[in-house]
Length: 118
Image 1: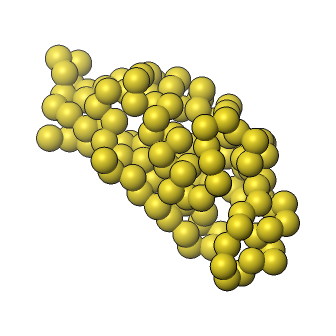
Image 2 (image 1 turned 60 degrees about the vertical axis):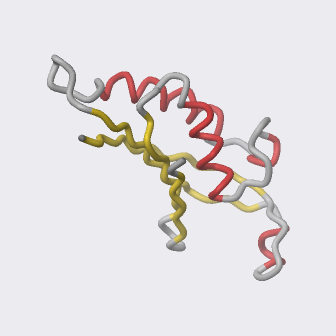
């Protein structure tokens, strides 16, 4: 079994209600998010699990929904947590990438990371 991945990033703003570090989180603030999606399977006759060009096309669509947006207003996202971002990306991509195996979202600048594997 092989697993291939493709990364993308997006810049976005949001607010967040939390118990600690609450003052800064309640105000509108932004992050650069780095996402990575994983597709798993056996190589096809082409020798590839999936053409990464097809993966990049799918990522372009989901990136456009998030990049330079106010995440609090993105339909279907909910509070802009790393967990919800992973799930949002998963739900958007799964119909187009049936072999999708995981989604990771991280904020490099502060060392936060979340991976969703159903």
